[in-house]
Image (cartoon, helix red, strand yellow):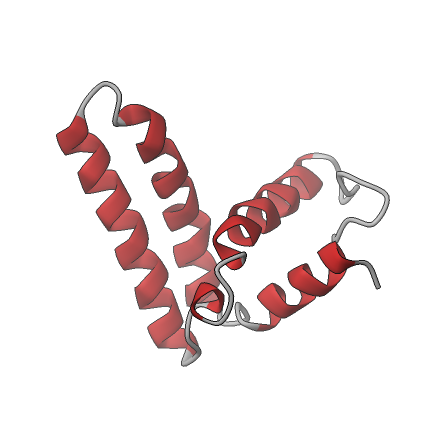
Length: 103
């Protein structure tokens, strides 16, 4: 198993509850979009960023598992990649983004 597959498998294991997955599906893009928005409107970006994190923590409360990044900060990057790859797969009929991608 590649390092990417291992990271994704561990991330996936911490995100099984449907409410948690839904919170992350909305929260991660909110956080990511807030970063460039901060160049235009700090107040809007701060609201988006805070709402995104609130959703993530609410999801983990429902999951009854702590966020993966608390154990390893690398998961701050794995989360957006995991959900981007999942979205890509849905848009492309289940095909992964790379040779060792997770579907």
